[in-house]
Length: 377
Ligand code: SF4
Image 1: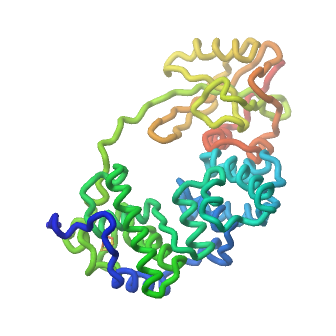
Image 2: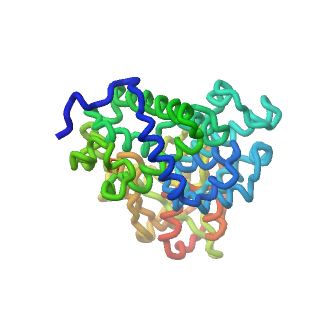
């Protein structure tokens, strides 16, 4: 049982023993990750943005390719948005890539191409929130900045048996207070912010994991409230879940005799879609599922041509946040030239389509489709 009196209070000091133990463990157990070698502000920034919502194993390859393609802020600032999105293609959450690109341009124009060191200037960069700013300041510049990601939240929630749902404002205040106390105590104890912050994140990523915490081999097992009480799996507490939403999208695959596919690109949020704006995709509409005739008529209006369904090519499942999508691709024959008034449209070879800036859902659809139906325009 975790006693109420044993819980840490906001602003409570973090015992030096915790930090000493964990940084020593980190020195022996840190994973060899590409962005940990030569942790320049640019490399730390790009890796941290990629790691938001994406697993380390997926990011490794993307990070290496991105660094080869855009080795520094200047190269990223000069690149076209299409090139940046293509390098990001498949990582999802494309707003991250656009913000990264916008921030690189800002660094080029406002800071002479040098990554700013000042906390306010870092926080003013597009897409840089409290977490990313803390990562850049502590890991790249080795400054005493706090950092809280999902791993740090989980470790603190268990170390101190936090009694509130982790996403609640009260719990967030607690963990940021502890994160600040952590890095301050680390510096006072002669540790570097770079090592002590990464040690905390590393423990959460490799030992104090969400589904299977390995308390038995944890360096903090004697000091952890939830762990010593055998209650690690109960923390962090979560708020009641909102129910997920089911949405059906009908896509139309228009093909040419040479196998080319007709893709479109929405701009300015029109027509609105659950898929990200500004990426190449198959034209689609939302529909209730079941009989697709209404949806096909809506598509005909949208493309200003008649369509004759030629059988379903593929059905895929995809999730975006708490929305579960059923994606159905309908092969079609057009009885006129399709038009796309909401942005760009063009023909792609099947290989070219997969190399273009496309969302993960589109990649899934294209990969699962057999050769598209021949289109008689
Ligand atoms: Fe996490 Fe268990 Fe270690 Fe506590 S003892 S920090 S719950 S792995």
